[in-house]
Length: 190
Image 1 (cartoon, rainbow, N blue to C red):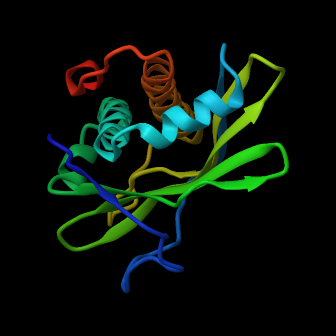
Image 2: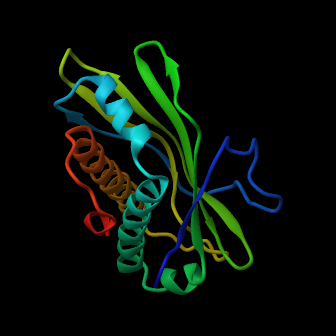
């Protein structure tokens, strides 16, 4: 099951496209962070310098991992999600106090429906002169089907956590490589 991820540039729309259902049986607030051994300015700069397609590839890899867990929990989920693609949008950085935020969203767009997967903030914050925290915090919506088959709530929570962890870990690796001047290739992400 292949999943394509597209990156939308510019501000996110105020609402999802017409016809998108925003009712969900299972949604969770998730937060995952990593600490990076560089000052906040270096991490912010490196994140701004990453090609958007690399962020898309990291999101794609994380989402595919989450879908793999969903299919393990419910073998019928794959058929319900076939033909869907993930669209990723991220707003430019905004400074709020000691934190830089980039609002982001992922949506699953299928042949006949669309649903949000993630509404979150990508946060960069200093935790000392030479340490920075990179975090994603927000709402994760369990990918569902028109028949609303879902794994139990505990499994669904763990799937969301694993998805966000995969994304933040991959993004942290890309940002560190860029900040330290190491070469990064798209193959490193895939």
